[in-house]
Length: 193
Image (cartoon, rainbow, N blue to C red; front, side, top):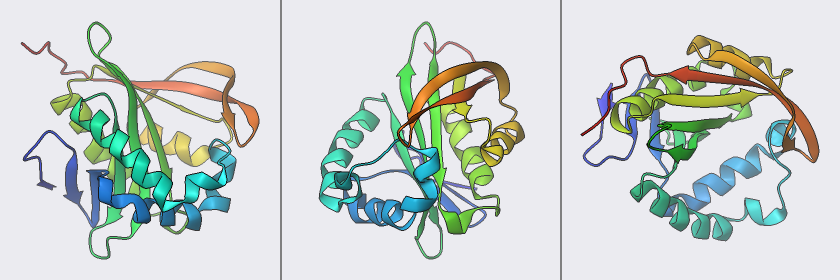
């Protein structure tokens, strides 16, 4: 597994995929990904207005995300095919809280043409250790809709444990959706000096 961590930003490559933090120059790549997968992702994501799919909107958003990366407050990452550089999905860590929680929330999406190939399992196998070992998170929380069996399977594969059920938890595609709440705890967590 190649690790390009000359800085503290996530950038790893393994088994044909790259997981790296977004960069201000990624606007067209991200806009194209969401445009190509608009219909497929709609049942699993918040309703999006037309600006969400525009590269200029992403250009402005990526400047803000880059600042959040630098401040270690959030990480918005791309999953790319290491040969073609095609964007296959996203992995994001938000709501980073340090002392005393040392926790964050995990979110992700995957292109329709990347489904069923183990891409998200591989991506999370690179991203989770980064959050535990480099960012020193103690807990990563993730939630999924009960009908999203693929999301359930990927979280189970990484040993996220069910912690609860939240009724009407997130506004997804214009409707309040119930979610299963899970988390993964870092078994090797130690306070950093």
